[in-house]
Image 1: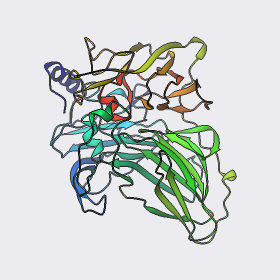
Image 2 (image 1 turned 180 degrees about the horizontal axis):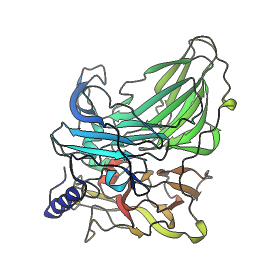
Image 3 (image 1 turned 90 degrees about the vertical axis):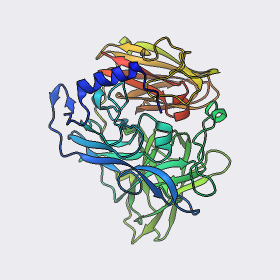
Length: 464
């Protein structure tokens, strides 16, 4: 939990005065107010849950009264509202990961809004401009709150979407549990300085290897969200053909078959799965990263075959993301590196007590004279290219809040010009990410391996 310094309290008071705590806040688009609908209540709760055979796990955190956080459904271009009611002992917020929304709705304590303390509430209201698969989670005390369950999937629907015969949404995450089914230490410092501390129990929708029925010979829209705090996945599908149609909420420039695709925490994947014609046939979604492949979930064919063909599937409409003018774009150097181990200074969102990682040689939180100084100050409406280089021996899923970028090039592989909000950068890779600074405010940029984020690999960009 972060230390409440005088600076943070003053900043919280200023934000509370500007935006209000527990007040209805109208989302804004293009500078005009949009009336918000009745808010969906998301109440943080401590529960027990059956995550493994050893018995019920205590102190699981969720949104709602029981079980996994609900799949929140929105509609592209239509106002959405949610009321966060805090029923747990820690302060919290909600970050709407991947959604381009007003800065004051972004859910980063002290940077965009005040904490929501126990018994209080905060109203979020915005109009999602993009359709696709996104997710929501707290953005402070994140390692414990996310690690104990507070991660949910968002589906933003578009009436122009192609027609599928079935949809399956999977929330993929680990749990750090001992043999008795109870939580063990969420992280180990020696692992935080490497690839992160992995969970011991792996689930899809809070179940180990769940199975879902789908029409034989039909087309399934399989939506995957990696809401884990550490694990990187290498996806493979066995028993059926799968076509990648979207990554990180945006349709891919050119569809391609899923043979092996690596994605990290914070990323999302949408597949068109053509189910087998034979009733009872099983399709396995696997993670084959590492030496011990795991089946994450299965699909079972039911009923007579529909004889669908994925080639007949209509395209997914592009989201209205502004295209950068590469010729006039200003370049922002961004180097990801390790740093000398030291005790981290207090930050806006606290720390784990260590500093192992840095962006442009500064661990944040870390040794900066002012840890709230932005990485760069950008001019509203101008095009930029992030020249990002990973000089560490580890992979990092780098996430940018509030804006989407287009992948231009990589030094290690051929890349499609994907539109995304999270890029999984490999060791010793250099990549160029282009975007238009079209959303004013302070936008966090960080590694979504939460231990890396909380031990220095985070900063933010200011757009004004």
